[in-house]
Length: 401
Image (cartoon, helix red, strand yellow):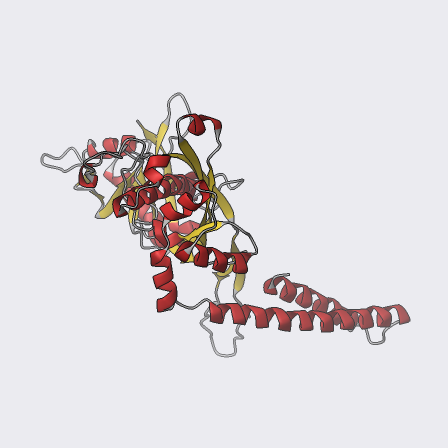
């Protein structure tokens, strides 16, 4: 049981016991009920002390990585993690050491690589079936275009190294100050709280690699394999951050309850300012806009006014002085016709929780790749998303395309 759950149960028991003491004299039934509650409260207090001890211990152990750990992470090779499974041998070196650490921490056996192995990634990558050549030129490598990965770049806060569910307290209301006349009494006010919960959700990707590629020891090959696998997973996660349904995927920004709405059916400078006003009323300082290519094109071709020399709504990558991120990950709204969506907000109010290891599993016997002399590689990552303050965002879902 989580610490906050223990405290909530204990508080409920205390309230129940206090209600029994409201009467001047307890009946035998009330006395028995009170004694039972007293025992339950004592037991919960012991549970709370144990849970608090464990939480404090975990917090102390979750400090920054020491030099030795950073060096170990830097030595883990993704290609070596794949190669040892293809060859049917035990992992060795840094891969084996890191996998043992994860196994001890999670109790799950497997071959693991640290998330840091994927942090340096290109936006244009491809499978590597055709890059093993006599004269290998990684500087000339051409890959497919990916949907732009924007959410982390917009300022979403990333929490790494998580274990289990993560509960983040959130203050909803605060105390209220009051002006008084002579003899007036202050009215009691207090803060109210709720909480955000980040739960482990899993995203994975399958990719086929050639055996010849895996046997290469080139650092460039290592980087290409990392880039492709990380870009595939990151693209899926970026889409979920924007429009996840909250079932298997994280609950994305556009589907979060409490997001403000606006009207841009008729694009105009006044309508843009109205969106900014909605956030200003909530004491939110927006950091950026987020939209799709179609909606961005409409903004870039709409004049601010009919006055001669007036500029366009979107110029130089900015709208009302704020940067505009454009990606195909922002979906259209409705059908016949599809409407564009434009989001404005403070993207630092989004939390991204990442459980820090990526599990690698190789299947050298998958039928299709086996016939072609390749192997199938699966990568699994665990992460979740939460919006801390939904009112920090406003979305217009009625832009004519």
